[in-house]
Image (tube, rainbow, N blue to C red):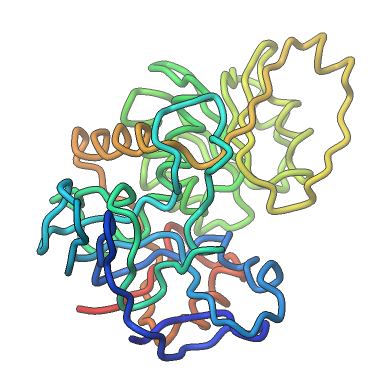
Length: 327
């Protein structure tokens, strides 16, 4: 089968052996897969190993075979892949055995994948293959950050630095669905306009004076994945006692901030990573309830995977970057 792999420290399209479903496993013929920023960093993590590794965490397809003992899905069912491995019940933090699909396990950038039957969920009927293929990782990440950790509620004001990522587009839609006010930032005028089109109430430039721009706003919750470049600026606009949830750091990981200012402001800081199967199922129910459609930014063919990586690396996207694997 055709696959996009890391081999000897390089990304390439190659042929890999077709996997077979063993006891407790399912074989899924993939239709689409979603590229995430995590995938961009896997070459460095995998190093110069000679064994090819199929990368990719998100995907959707049709069950082609089931192993002995599998009863939750049947051959022919349309499913999405749950990339949060072995994290089933909602908990304060992931269990020790938690990992993310796509390293060290083979991932979704291939024509087929075998994985535990516990890691697939039925595809929402109203979603296209392109919408479903990039759903799980960013939507689950956003759902846990917003609802489990951020405890957003109707009437809250949510602040999101960076409007164009897949997670950010889900955050905007989720928050608007339950009646929150949403404010976003971006360096791109196009992304600011797109954010307003999908529900953002206010969209401001990243290089503007946030304190001045938001002086008449009360920010209850901020969700940030940018890291050092925005952390202190975000704290400056958060209300006293407000909540900030961090789920990533696309700029520097290490942040210096004023502890005295932090504890006098009574701020609440939460870390968040991916989410449990319980939360994934809640998120899918949310999509069904609101007939919500994920934002697909651009679709590439599997043979164009390198171009898709370059596109995401340059931060050109608004919404998800998708690989179409089969029609």
